[in-house]
Length: 211
Image (cartoon, rainbow, N blue to C red):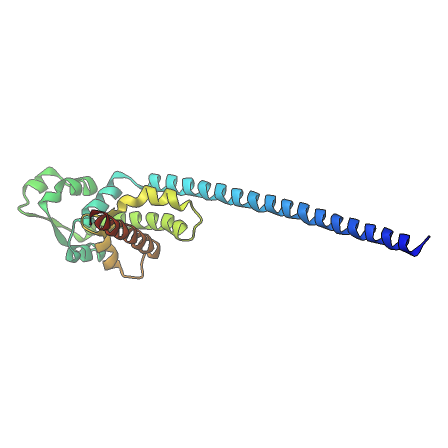
C-alpha cells in the first residue's frame, strides 16, 4: 500500500476518533444536564414538601390561647413584658380583658372588681409566657428553614408577611424578643430585617413615583 494511502486512512481514523470523542462528550453533557435538572427538581420538590410539613405543624401549635397571648403581649409596654418574661406579678389594662379571659379563663367577677387594671399573679404571668414562647419557638423553626433555604422561601414570605406591622414599623413580638435578649430567635430577627428592608424599599419607590 502506498504511503499516501496509509496516511489518508490514518487521517480518516483520526477524524473518526475525534468525532467519536465529540459524540461521547455531547452525550455525557446531555446526561449530566439531565441529572442536574432532576436533582434540582427533586430539591424543589423536597423544599415544597418540607414547607408544607412545617406549615401543618405550625397550624397544629397555633391555638386560640397562643394567638391571643401573642396579640396581648405585642400591646404591652416593655416593663410589663419584662415582668411576664420573668414570671412576676404585674397589672394589665382592663381594655385587654377579652384577651385575658381567653388566655387565663378569668372569672367575670374578677373583671368587674377591677378598676383600670387587672392584677396578674406570677403564676398567670408564667402561663402567658409559656404561650408566647411556644409561639416564638414554633415560628423560629419555620423561619430557620427559610433562613437556611431548606423551604420554599417565597411561600414562607407570602404566608408570614403579616408579621410586620407597617403602621407601627415593628415586627412580631419585638418587645418580648428584646426582653428575651438580642441573640435569641436569630431566624425571626433575620426575617424581620428582610421584611423591614422590603417595606423600606417600597416606601422609597412610592415617594420617587409621587415626585
